[in-house]
Length: 106
Image (cartoon, rainbow, N blue to C red; front, side):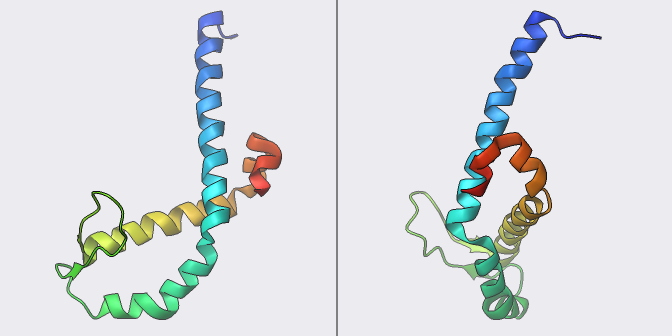
């Protein structure tokens, strides 16, 4: 079954959004060096967090407008999100190159 013109236009619009988002994700991954920071966390942070109760507070030291303190449980959840994104990029690099071309090697 072929797409109608309207369906093709909708898919094309979403395709530009999706590939642009993935391009931006690749830029972030390259700029932020997730492998380095993940290893830093494994070596220096995870052990500290393991000694704390989930309800204890990790103070906000980011300087990001509107960011607030987090509980240890919330902080660990953010770590999981960041680590999952990094792993997914690494494991799917071939597909990302197909999707965004040379932009995958930014």
